Image (cartoon, rainbow, N blue to C red):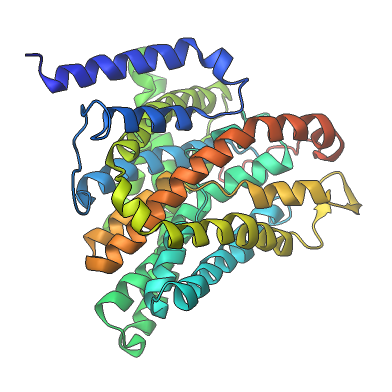
Length: 432
């Protein structure tokens, strides 16, 4: 009898071969690669071939899911940073500021209201649900993000920078929910939450992202002047930057996701040879794509029909309100008064504002926060409730956003992008 592990390798190898060779055809279809991986994950799970048996009953092993999704997210947010070539000035990042400062809190607290009023949660539990589901995903949203370092499209830039930042900046509210699970008397820990989880962790993430990335770049340049590194090994500088930045930031209790995104921005601006960051970006994107396959296969394989049906009503309520009310209305509010990148006298096209509202893709980031919450006190009936609402929301997002992203972005490129895109701003070396 053939070992199941060998069959898994065979199946994954065939999947990668077919998806890679068929990518030219798939990219033209109204579906995403993630949707294909999800369907395959279900087929190889307990309801299909039974090749992947990571979960049968009860809560999925949170530690495994946490570590896998953690790595996928840090690679992805670093790639987001590498793609962005814009001056680090508030004006140039106006759309990002709006999406992070206004849209994300609106999403978190609107979801919390839904959890409190309709799902039987207390405020702390509801805020945890909101923090898990509010961040958009930097991994599954590649179809709507910046295509390369020369892309200055405002919609793609906003979605890329939002995906790179909000996976980090939702963390304070995840911690808020976890603190509330352990002690429902907020007065006992609220000041510490503000000082440590809100102020210190964000500041440390930004500072460490700059310091570690600059140190790695400096060391890289010094070594390369004396002796060139083997070309086949040089790409691993990107992975070492990611791992060093993330681990050192976590050691000082900063937000590693935020630090890695900042590190990507720093690296992109720190080499005088523009091909160096581009080479790292291509390598990181390959790692990201491979990691995406693994993560979505796992998601598909751990889905169970009974609990999904048990929480179907609650999940449907959250999905409909989140996708069709909270995100679109929040994006509309956040972009009020936003001017077109080309003209101060022209407002941003209303169709672009609605696209910001629609492309709130949920995915790997939410899986990570869910697993992190399980590892830090989320359990029992509440854990099952939040877990299956989260799983179902991600599945629906993969389906509806995967189907709609290609035709909508093609329509946007034809009808809106050429008229609204900004002239590419000059790159400034703020970190030099």
